Length: 67
Image 1 (cartoon, rainbow, N blue to C red):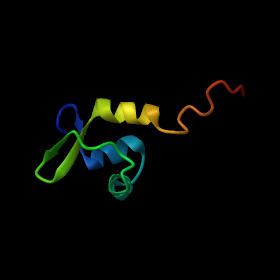
Image 2: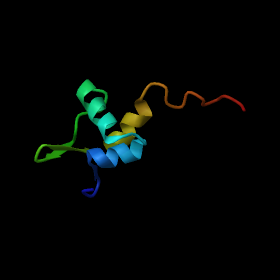
Image 3: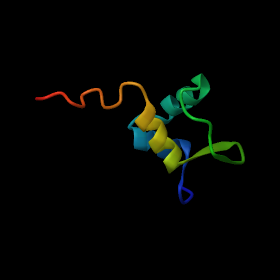
């Protein structure tokens, strides 16, 4: 990992999905645009992914529910 940036593999690990799933998300436009590229490899800033995860529909859907 380049300091402060996530590669496709890093992002997959962070999201708990396979690398292929991250590639599918990128192809479908589900992920935010990469912040940088090294050659043809996309990189995302950790802040970009944190904001994306916080804004995704369905996040915190249990907030306020009592168990």
